[in-house]
Every structure is written in C-alpha cells, then in structure tokens.
Length: 176
Image 1: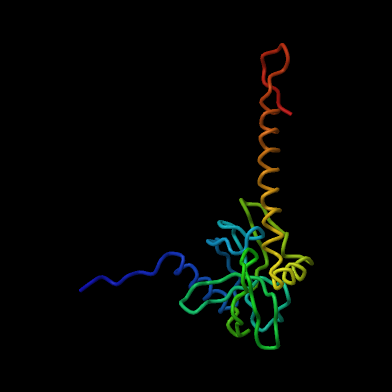
Image 2: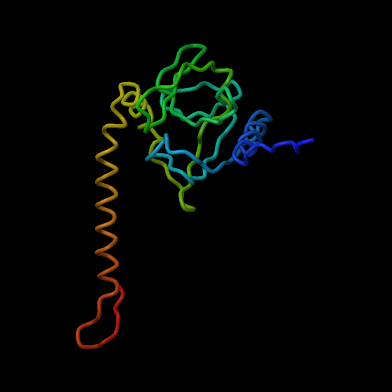
C-alpha cells in the first residue's frame, strides 16, 4: 500500500488561513506569487480580515479559493450586487467573476522586510482598480518598476561608494 501523499506546504498553510478566516479570525500568510506586484510582492507578509458579510469596495484586495484549491489574492476591479471580478495588479487579464459568498478575506496590512507598506491600500485603490480593469495598470507599472529598480540601484551604489570613501590625508574611512 502506497503512503498517503501530503499536500504541499503552501496548500496546507492556505487551508489553515481559510479556516481561520471562516472562524472570524484575522490571519497572516507569506505571499508566494507575483501577480500583485509591485504593490504586493513575493515574500511579503500580508494580514487578512474575514469578510463575514461586510461590504466589498472597488479596489479592495480580497482572498478567495479557486477551484482546485489555490488561494488567490487579487484586487476587485468590478462588482455587482452578488459577484466581483478581480485581477492581479501585474496580470494582463481579469479573472472570471466570483460569487461574493466565495470571498474569504480582505487585505488589511502588508509587511515587507519587517516594515509596513501602505501604497495600494489607501484612497488610491479605486483608481488602481479602474486602471487595472481597463488593462492600463500593468503597462503603466512596467516602466515605473524599471525606473525604480535602476534608480534605486544607482542611488544605492552611489550611497555605498560615498559611505566607504576615505577622508583625504587621514587614511580613515568616513561615514556620512
């Protein structure tokens, strides 16, 4: 008799998170995908609150289980009285419509490298949802991410170079 196969760790963690939310508890999980970049990145720690009949708004980031058991965390880009359409911020297409009853949680906090992140969770979330629904968010974000990566890397390199420069005539390193 073959031993029973255990589900992958991410599936077990996702199941536990969904159980916590269903029991009315706030839950946290580490993000494993890139569909919500740059606002939510892989390895970010996200905090979700149970939806439990609370109204959903345009731009809210919600968690739901896809058929097949995968937990999805995407932004609401359209909604009706009984359904929502979601889309990952980095995705090129929207997800299929999802019944409100299938939503498990709403994103309330993001932590990256131990520091709280707020961009994408405030008043700008409705504008982000509209851009995403029109298919404009990903094309707008691509050049911004490129600029951010290149500007941050060059700024960091300059900062490192200036912090390790040697004081004239003293032979000692200076720190700024």
